[in-house]
Length: 136
Image (cartoon, rainbow, N blue to C red; front, side, top):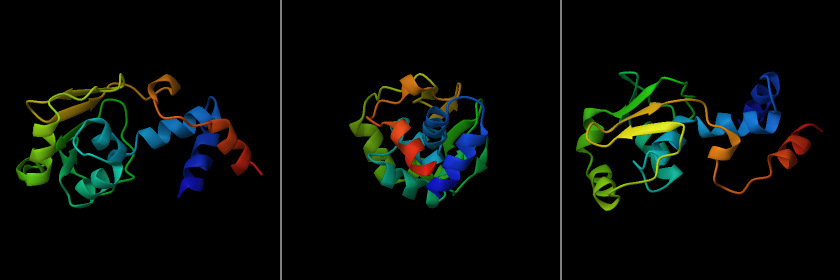
Protein backbone atom coordinates (compact mmCIF):
# COMPACT_ATOMS: atom_id res chain seq x y z
CA UNK A 1 0.00 0.00 0.00
CA UNK A 2 2.89 2.36 0.73
CA UNK A 3 4.08 1.83 -2.82
CA UNK A 4 0.65 2.98 -4.05
CA UNK A 5 1.06 6.22 -2.10
CA UNK A 6 4.49 6.69 -3.65
CA UNK A 7 3.12 6.14 -7.16
CA UNK A 8 0.34 8.64 -6.52
CA UNK A 9 2.86 11.16 -5.12
CA UNK A 10 5.03 10.88 -8.25
CA UNK A 11 2.03 11.68 -10.48
CA UNK A 12 1.15 14.80 -8.48
CA UNK A 13 2.66 18.19 -9.38
CA UNK A 14 5.42 19.35 -7.04
CA UNK A 15 8.09 17.59 -5.03
CA UNK A 16 7.47 13.85 -4.76
CA UNK A 17 8.71 13.50 -1.16
CA UNK A 18 6.55 16.36 0.10
CA UNK A 19 3.57 15.01 -1.84
CA UNK A 20 4.07 11.61 -0.20
CA UNK A 21 4.13 13.09 3.30
CA UNK A 22 1.03 15.15 2.52
CA UNK A 23 -0.84 12.04 1.33
CA UNK A 24 0.10 10.11 4.47
CA UNK A 25 -0.93 13.02 6.72
CA UNK A 26 -4.34 13.16 5.01
CA UNK A 27 -5.26 9.58 5.89
CA UNK A 28 -8.42 9.56 8.01
CA UNK A 29 -6.81 7.56 10.83
CA UNK A 30 -3.99 10.11 11.03
CA UNK A 31 -6.44 13.03 11.04
CA UNK A 32 -8.32 11.46 13.97
CA UNK A 33 -5.00 11.19 15.82
CA UNK A 34 -4.03 14.78 14.94
CA UNK A 35 -7.38 16.08 16.20
CA UNK A 36 -6.65 14.49 19.58
CA UNK A 37 -9.47 11.95 19.41
CA UNK A 38 -7.09 9.04 20.05
CA UNK A 39 -3.89 8.35 21.97
CA UNK A 40 -2.16 6.69 19.00
CA UNK A 41 -2.53 6.13 15.28
CA UNK A 42 -3.29 2.46 15.93
CA UNK A 43 -6.14 3.46 18.22
CA UNK A 44 -7.32 6.00 15.62
CA UNK A 45 -7.36 3.23 13.02
CA UNK A 46 -9.61 1.17 15.28
CA UNK A 47 -11.94 4.11 15.94
CA UNK A 48 -12.38 4.56 12.18
CA UNK A 49 -12.70 0.81 11.49
CA UNK A 50 -15.47 0.49 14.08
CA UNK A 51 -17.54 3.13 12.30
CA UNK A 52 -17.23 5.91 14.88
CA UNK A 53 -16.30 8.59 12.31
CA UNK A 54 -18.23 10.58 9.72
CA UNK A 55 -16.74 12.57 6.85
CA UNK A 56 -19.05 15.21 5.42
CA UNK A 57 -21.95 13.60 7.30
CA UNK A 58 -21.36 10.08 5.95
CA UNK A 59 -19.99 7.23 8.01
CA UNK A 60 -16.53 6.15 6.80
CA UNK A 61 -14.88 3.00 8.17
CA UNK A 62 -11.78 2.94 5.96
CA UNK A 63 -8.69 4.14 7.88
CA UNK A 64 -6.78 4.89 4.66
CA UNK A 65 -9.54 7.18 3.34
CA UNK A 66 -7.90 10.40 2.09
CA UNK A 67 -9.55 13.57 3.31
CA UNK A 68 -9.66 16.63 1.08
CA UNK A 69 -9.57 20.36 1.69
CA UNK A 70 -12.96 21.49 3.02
CA UNK A 71 -13.97 18.08 4.43
CA UNK A 72 -15.56 17.98 7.87
CA UNK A 73 -14.74 15.11 10.21
CA UNK A 74 -16.91 14.32 13.21
CA UNK A 75 -17.68 11.49 15.55
CA UNK A 76 -20.81 9.46 14.89
CA UNK A 77 -23.33 9.12 17.70
CA UNK A 78 -21.72 5.81 18.69
CA UNK A 79 -18.34 7.56 18.73
CA UNK A 80 -19.61 10.34 20.97
CA UNK A 81 -20.92 7.72 23.41
CA UNK A 82 -17.77 5.57 23.30
CA UNK A 83 -16.24 5.36 26.77
CA UNK A 84 -12.64 5.25 25.58
CA UNK A 85 -13.05 8.32 23.36
CA UNK A 86 -14.77 10.19 26.22
CA UNK A 87 -11.86 9.25 28.48
CA UNK A 88 -9.31 10.53 25.95
CA UNK A 89 -11.16 13.83 25.58
CA UNK A 90 -11.30 14.27 29.36
CA UNK A 91 -7.57 13.55 29.69
CA UNK A 92 -6.63 15.94 26.90
CA UNK A 93 -8.09 19.29 27.84
CA UNK A 94 -6.57 20.84 24.75
CA UNK A 95 -4.39 19.37 22.04
CA UNK A 96 -2.39 21.59 19.70
CA UNK A 97 -4.00 21.22 16.28
CA UNK A 98 -1.80 21.47 13.17
CA UNK A 99 -2.30 24.59 11.04
CA UNK A 100 -4.04 22.66 8.29
CA UNK A 101 -6.81 21.47 10.65
CA UNK A 102 -9.34 23.15 12.90
CA UNK A 103 -11.23 21.43 15.70
CA UNK A 104 -14.40 22.51 17.48
CA UNK A 105 -14.20 20.64 20.76
CA UNK A 106 -17.79 21.42 21.76
CA UNK A 107 -19.17 19.83 18.58
CA UNK A 108 -16.39 17.23 18.29
CA UNK A 109 -16.01 18.32 14.69
CA UNK A 110 -12.88 19.02 12.69
CA UNK A 111 -12.34 20.64 9.33
CA UNK A 112 -9.58 20.31 6.75
CA UNK A 113 -8.53 23.91 6.07
CA UNK A 114 -5.89 23.05 3.46
CA UNK A 115 -3.60 20.24 2.43
CA UNK A 116 -0.72 19.72 4.87
CA UNK A 117 2.65 21.19 3.90
CA UNK A 118 6.12 19.92 4.77
CA UNK A 119 6.48 22.43 7.62
CA UNK A 120 3.28 21.09 9.23
CA UNK A 121 4.82 17.65 9.70
CA UNK A 122 6.61 17.50 13.03
CA UNK A 123 8.09 14.01 13.03
CA UNK A 124 11.63 13.42 11.78
CA UNK A 125 11.63 11.87 8.33
CA UNK A 126 14.00 12.19 5.42
CA UNK A 127 11.55 11.90 2.57
CA UNK A 128 14.32 12.14 -0.02
CA UNK A 129 15.68 8.78 1.16
CA UNK A 130 12.23 7.24 0.68
CA UNK A 131 12.02 8.70 -2.83
CA UNK A 132 15.48 7.35 -3.69
CA UNK A 133 14.59 3.89 -2.36
CA UNK A 134 11.31 3.59 -4.28
CA UNK A 135 12.76 5.12 -7.46
CA UNK A 136 15.07 2.14 -7.99
